[in-house]
Image (cartoon, rainbow, N blue to C red; front, top):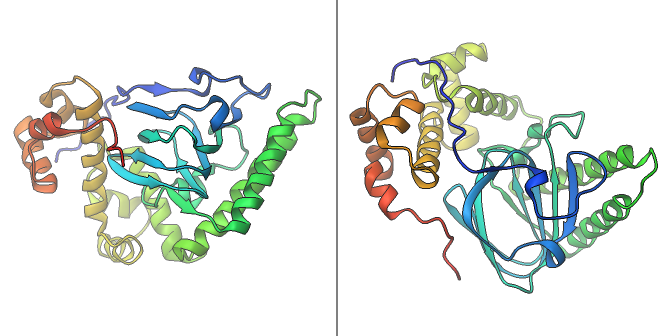
Length: 295
């Protein structure tokens, strides 16, 4: 694939916090509400956000589709979405819980450093009874704070949100057996951050290895150990994901999508896509589902 200047691929429907049909907190870049009061049970059209989202399901069930993967929704579960991920859901009408949204700028520490907001990580976490009760208590404290109007409210909201995120990080690490302090984990995290910035114009493992001051072979070894895939496979999967997003949620023609993703021509893009997915881009577009299957 030829190296190419980055082209804008932000053509999917993108929603900001202010686009949500809810009453916002007086603090810019943050909102929290009870799903059963203001949330929608059926969000059939795929879209992406420019903010982080936590969906805490206290009770209920359904299906949450995130980047073309259906995840069963069940009681005592948290879903994590980072900016740019495409999702939709179909939940039972009696689903109870919280939705918490915040902008990337809301916290002084980049939230993307947390394991569950990485593109390579599972976007869901089951909770124990104790964890669910504690998280609900923290969310209620945040909810109460959103009604305060004094000058301390913004600071306390950030403090309480960060407490929630650290608790979730602890539970997520325990559940998924992540060695977050290992050098290999930090390297793969840095690689994924670089990939998110450069995948439209850089598909060479050597580019990312150089940026991380590693050899290509060593980066492949680390990725295989931490992610179960080589660095080259991770790069190709990221391109495939964006191609699927564009094919499903835009009217762009195949040639235009190929150019946006840095491919030299449409036939090369078609061969790339079919090798990984088993279908041509046109076949995928015809068969792609926007609405997650109801269970």
